[in-house]
Every structure is written in structure tokens, then in C-alpha cells.
Length: 97
Image (tube, rainbow, N blue to C red; front, side):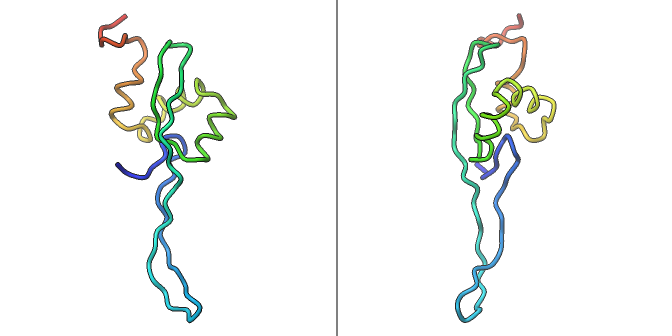
């Protein structure tokens, strides 16, 4: 899986490590990705998101309902597996309500 936050879209950063002698070697900065499970009271179920530390702060600030609503409208940031899990109007068995 890629190191990408589903809420903020934060990805890996690239750059150089510069030693004391100014010798440069390539390196990468990985985001602090955590797998978190949140409860959606409106749908009476849990969802699992891959979020960065900043994404967790955004969810704490805005609320999980608002963040999930925004993720549904901005579907490119949401993985295809997460989109299937977040369809409104469906039961867990997959049948329509």
C-alpha cells in the first residue's frame, strides 16, 4: 500500500541528506500514516481509514461525519476499496435500502 493519507492526501517527500562534508545522498520522508477505525453514528457502523497524524487532527477538529462527507465528494483521494465501503444507502450485506 502507498504511504498516502486518505484525508489530507499527504504523501512521501524526497530530498537529500547533507553530511558535514556536504556530500549529498538521496532520502525520503515518510508521512506518519496510522490505520484508524472510526464509528459513524449516522450509519451505525465503523470505517477504517489510513490517515496521517495531521489527518487525525483534522478529524478531531471537523468531526468524522464532515470528513467522510467531504471524502465522498472528493472521490480521487478515496481508494476504490474505501469508496465501496462508504456507499450511502446500502446495508452491510450489500442490498439496497
